[in-house]
Image (cartoon, rainbow, N blue to C red; front, side, top):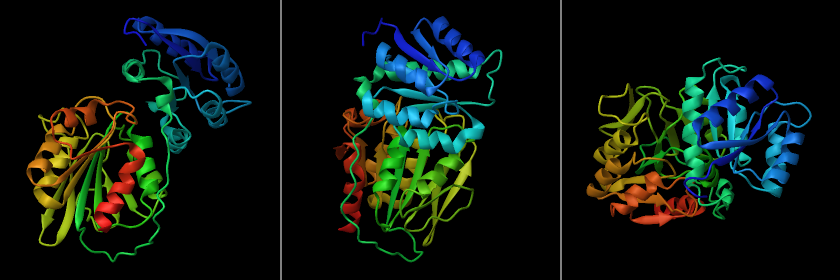
Length: 349
């Protein structure tokens, strides 16, 4: 896609009011051309196959054919980047859509968009830049592979032998769902996650991760203990750090500091991981815009820990992992389906 080319968008929403507002935001940006509008999945599917848009904005609750059925058929027939535009009340549905192949989501607080949806405008324009960064439309669907190991290791509630810090942003929810789904045994490790996400979605996301595999996953609360075989997700609009007191590993959930450029701050989390675990610290830097995680990965590298980054071939956006790789900090550059298997082999050895 040429930099000066407008991104061709299909807007799908059963509300005429919402379709008009989204289309106006896109048209006024100068970045996009709305090539079609559809009020349900059936109409959207016909227009997609005929017009071949670069990206689709999708409501999930629609008559005749809902967003989930549309996604299943779309990803089988003509994989296309899809951005879900969803209300807070549809939190669980958002992650179901990501599992079906949606690229990203935008949160809208109400069913009907506000008359001056400035926050929605900012989010839509940011997602347009993500579409520009995609190498091709098919990048919206990642390859999936399930690990063949299934040792069903049962661990007592003991401090983790390893501490894994995962940093992710754009495209991260679906990447994390794949990783946690492929961790088919409880490892002697604890996992902490900094995913850039609206605050009202992180608890539901943690619950979704919890259902994907044997790791116990929860949204972190200040003072929570982290034991082997468990994971904590930083709440949205907050930052998280890990602390060690003797044999006990706990997290602190804190408001952003003036120096935190991103919230949640992956740098802040990973620096605390390096300080707490040194040579047994592992940084995993997944897809995302910007360079959050770079300073944290450097801290883990300097502490003698291990740094793993997602490779460009599967990263939806290669900003965060690419920054770490270019800085010479990555010990391993792996496609997404190989990351879980690598962790299983590393910590099972």
